[in-house]
Structure formats: structure tokens, C-alpha cells
Amino acid sequence: MMNRLACIPFAALLVSTAVAAQPPTGERVPVAYPPAAKPAPVFDCFHINFAWGFRLGGRFIDADGTIYRYEKQKPAWLPQAIDENGARYLTQADLDAKYVERVKIGSIVASEIELHRASIEAAAQGKLVQSGPAANDAGSSSCHAYVRDTGNDRYRDVNLGTDGGVSDAPLRNDSAQAQELIAWLKSVGVSK
Image (cartoon, rainbow, N blue to C red; front, side, top):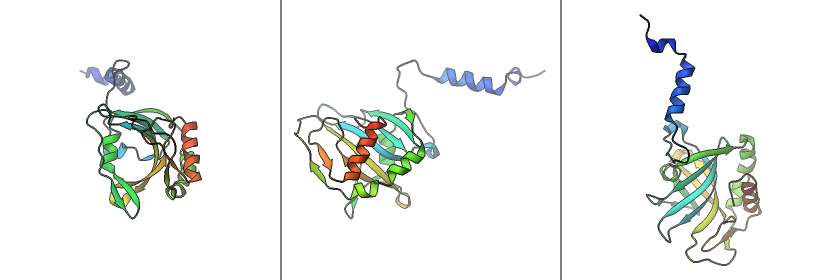
């Protein structure tokens, strides 16, 4: 006698499993990715605030051009930044913790990422300067570019400056390339 499951086409099993595994509309479910599927962030714009409890949220683009939205409230994201020779680095583990509750919201072609990635080094040469009035308890909004340091399992963190979001102390990266990158990030829906 033939097994009943053997009569169901494999594709139908996949579809029925995928439909059954989806959460009800509006419910947020963390996505657990195997290590090989973790995105390699390149550009990230986010708002972080500790004033009335912890809140973090933003959008990032990975090396493949996938755009993600993420939010985090607990536990607070407290990266252990490494400062070396004037550069700031974040570990892979810290970024994994930041992006743990991410949702894919779009994509752009990978060649566009490469085009803008070429401006990161020039943006890293810029200085951060005060760029407007401060707002108490507003938190911080900023955009960052990440450069993978493969040998050390970390990313160089290049602060591009404050985007259009509110900030306790808005900062502008005085590099023309940083300003161009923020304008581009706004055009693709990552920055405010």
C-alpha cells in the first residue's frame, strides 16, 4: 500500500507548510536566520533613544541590495565599540543583536550598492560637526556605512551624520560624499 503523503506533490507540501507557518496579520515574529543567511550590512539609518526606556529602530541595506526594517526594545542594544587608529569598529555579534528582529521591505540592484560603497572611504575622512539646535530627550538619528573587516569578524563603522530625524545633538559629517550618501539613502527610503 502506498504512503498517503507520497501521493501529494512536493511543491504542494511546501506551499501548505509555508501558509501554515505565517503569523496572523500585524503580529511581529523574529526571524531566525542560519549563520550563512545573515545579511552583511552596508548602509544603516536608525534612531536610538534611552530617555524614557530603550527604543531602537531603523532600516539597513545589505551587500545584496536587500532593504530591511528593524526595531528593538528589549534588551537594550549596547554594542562594545572598538576604537583603533581613529576608526570605530562593531563586532558581527553586536550587529546580529541589533538586527535580530528584521523584516525585508524591499531591494535595490546590487550594482547600485557597489556604486555608493565606493564613496565610503572619502566619507570616513570627514569630521562630525554640530549641525543644528539640540532637543532634550530626543535621542539620536544617524546614518552609518559599514565596511567589513573579514579577518577580525567586525565592521568599520563610518558615521555619515544625522539624517532628517530628531536628535539631541544633530551632527553633520562635513564630507561631501557623506552628504551625497545620505541624500541617496533618502531617495531609496532608508533615511528620513
